[in-house]
Image 1 (cartoon, one colour):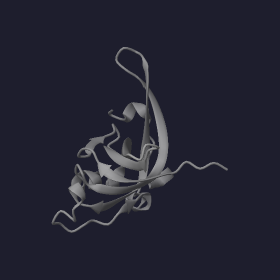
Image 2 (image 1 turned 90 degrees about the horizontal axis):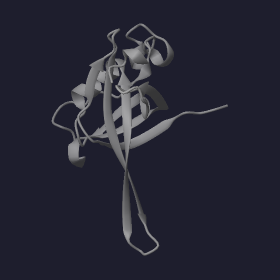
Image 3 (image 1 turned 180 degrees about the vertical axis):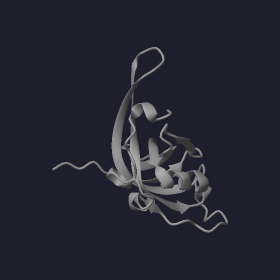
Length: 150
């Protein structure tokens, strides 16, 4: 048995970008920062920030674009995926990202409370699957990498 599951709690580094595949599927991209704190051998407190690329599909992508903004804290659950493509010069390029199936909004930007609006519920692939279409993860993934606009 194998498992590919990522769970992150962090803050958005920028507002989500919403794009659409050639077949019309919404795709949101954003980055999330997580921090690790420790005390070094010299007794000095240290901190390290790790950046994670997040990809969200379907209705959940549209909701992320609408309600999330830079600094907002989120809970992300999904799988790790590495994609390969060729850049304009023909060189192979790779990117590793978390394809989210759960995005839960935790707080407003900068660590404060909500942003003065009613918080939408967290969406999962099951919610997206209720829109019809359905395949793995509850949304139509019948496009290939050439359909992804980034």
